Image 1 (cartoon, one colour):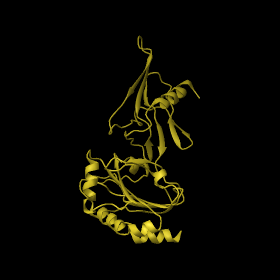
Image 2: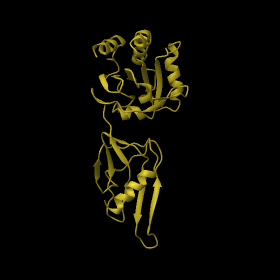
Image 3: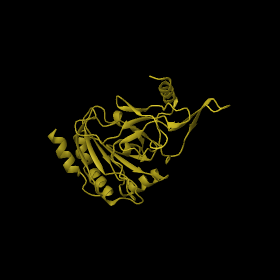
Image 4: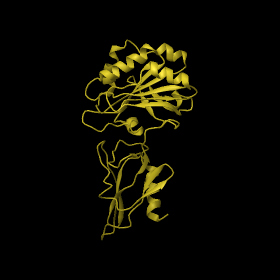
Amino acid sequence: MTLMQRFAGLLLSILPNESSVNCPTKNLRLLRTEWLVTFSRQPKSNQKRVTPISGANTTCPLSTSIRGSLIHSEASWLVSLPSSPHSSFCAARWEHSETPAVGSVAPDFTLTTPQGTSVQLSKWSQGHESALIILRGYPGYQCPYCQKQVHDFVNRAADFAVAGVPVLLVYPGAVSDLGDRAKEFLASESQLPANIILVTDPAFKVTDLYGLRWNEAGETAYPSTFLLDEHRRVLYSKISKSHGDRLSAQEALEQLHKK
């Protein structure tokens, strides 16, 4: 490992753990805040300058600024530093962002309810089967297909309770008042049953983590349902590439009874 690569590792160790900065590279997710690092050996400027780049829409200029290479290490990627003394680059850790397949472990995450209660998937699902539903959330309006699917699961909440299967709804969106929009979404339900929880996904953190971002104008996430075992392993999944075509509560219960 070169001195430059060691410096990159040290830099990564002191950066924030999470970031909302986007990267245009397909299937890669930025796990740490993007920092622009400039090395200069010009006269009177023989020093390293580290500058944080903030903003949710900041793009990491992989194709223009980084003249190094990506070194694969386990499940992550580390940017190799260029040898040129007059170059800039992004030092960041990357990870493949793929939709969990049947048999794989669903990635862990922590989100909050519109009321501010924190929910961590690994703790919430520990010791029992569960259903994880990624909704379209708020694409600029309340999706009627999402409302229909949620209403369906709420109506069958007693059946899921008997089966010992709680349901977690993820409501993504980019608006600043996403919590209020989520409350508006639930207005048609007098109160969610105790075994059904809705959490918001601001800036598409979990949507991106699960590789479900629908990158078209007016879209948010591909609506999806994952049935998980007590170890968070995916038993069954349905990914919809349209607004409709959702897994019904009856279909979910039938799939759980097969396991």
